[in-house]
Image (cartoon, rainbow over all chains, first blue to last red):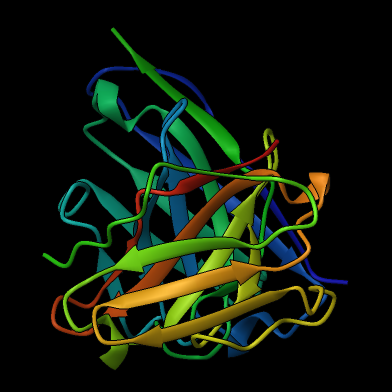
Length: 121
Length: 108
C-alpha cells in the first residue's frame, strides 16, 4: 500500500525558515517524480515544486522560486521542501504527491494527508 | 502563464449527470488530469490523460478533451460525489503544473 506521510509543519514567524519532509513507502520511491502542492485556507490547489526520480530536474512555481527548494534522498525514501523567507501568504496545508512517471509530468496518483504551515508575525 | 478556467460551482440532482468544464488555450493539445477533494481530505485522482480512470474509480466518472475545453462527466450522481473538483495540466512551455480554480459540486 502506498503511503506518504508529511511532517515538519508548524507556526513560524514571517521571514523564517522551515523544512518539510515526506516519508514514502509501498512503492519504489527512486523510480518516480515527486511534487509538493499547497492549499491556503479555503482556497484551491496550488502546485509548488516537482523533482524527477533521480533529482536531476527540479522546477518551482514562480511564487516560491528563489525561496523554496525541493530535494529528495532516495536512500531514505524521503522527499523534502526547504522553505525560506516565509511570507504570510505561504500559510497553507502542504501536500506531498507521487508522480505517475519518472519525469515531471503525468499527474499525481497518490497524495499524503498534508502538513499545515502557518506564517505569522 | 497558462490559465485553466473552471465554473465555481455546479449543482445537480441525485441520479442525473454533472458536467464540469475546464477551459484553457488549446487545452486539447495537452493531457488533462482531474482530482476530487472532499472536505478535510487530500485530493484523489479520478481521471488521468484526459479520459483514463485509475483502479477503484467508478465507471460513472469519465473525461474528454478537445479544442479549448476539457470536461469531467459524472453520470448517475450520488450524494457521495459532493466535493471540489480540480483539473490539471503540465505546461511544457513553462515547465510548471497548472491547476484549475476548482469547481464545487453540490448534490441537491
